[in-house]
Image 1 (cartoon, rainbow, N blue to C red):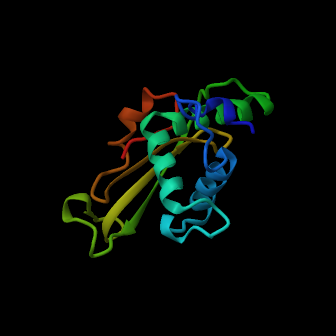
Image 2: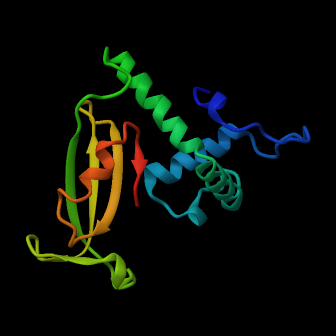
Length: 158
């Protein structure tokens, strides 16, 4: 597995893992690709609680960020580019917020006449993610650029 060396050591006490890491990673990728809820994981995968526990643990330890960074560099190298991009493109999209979304995280985008959130996506010239941010729709485009300018890695600045 390409990302296996980036994953933390299984158990400190040497116990064998109940579910192979490959199955855990495949289940996480399934959720990411399909957008299904954790509880809706097909029965072919390990129990959703196990998959979710690994995902949260790896996210807290920065493992997922390291994986994204390594894979992005590898794709750039294979394309004959430098590891780190020298240019980026930012785009934003306002989306209507559901009634369940708290008022503090929503805002009114007067330009698009939408009450909701605005997602900002920054990519390099190959279309690889550099940053993802979600803000109230009232935030204007140039405002969130500043924190991203100093970042050369993918970050979720939510």
